[in-house]
Image 1 (cartoon, rainbow, N blue to C red):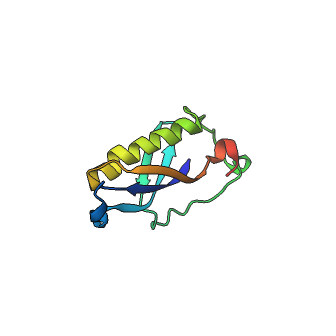
Image 2 (cartoon, rainbow, N blue to C red):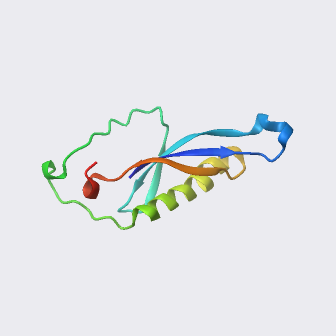
Length: 106
């Protein structure tokens, strides 16, 4: 599943808005292996929508729900990505998502 999140980080000092940060971060979540991948939004991933009937081979079933993938991705963004950069925990909001082609057609 592909998800884009907005993040907002407020350092708590009103006069020091210089240190506040906000932006977008995206995650591709492997719903079979239950882990997230991070990438730069400016990278061209060359993602294509395909009809599952045109694929050859066997579709691997999901091992988690979409809600679990979203929650795990939020935790990953907070703890593994942004906390290491900003040394604080940001607010995270899901902006958009595209479910896997296996179950949701796009």
